[in-house]
Amino acid sequence: MSAIADPKVVDRINSMTREEMCSLWRFAPSGHPYFDTTKPYNAVFKARFDELGGFSPAISKAINE
Image 1 (cartoon, rainbow, N blue to C red):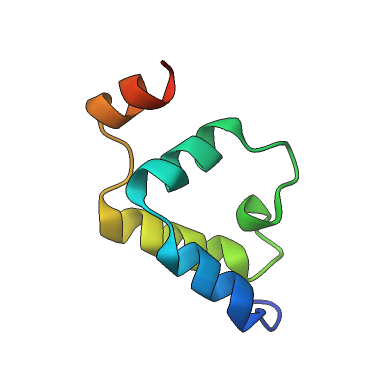
Image 2 (image 1 turned 60 degrees about the horizontal axis):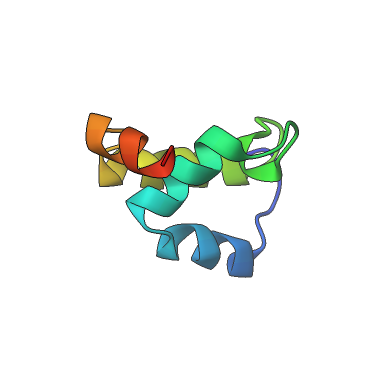
């Protein structure tokens, strides 16, 4: 990680459900800090997202309804 992560933000990421993460991944505005590779939250988000299994066809369909 390139900077020090705010523990409150890390806790928020780690408390997100798989569906919440998929929805954010799909609908977050450009430049969202969780997806900015120059910020430490990107690695935290990716690790949690992968741990939960990432996208599935069922989640993809559910968040688009």
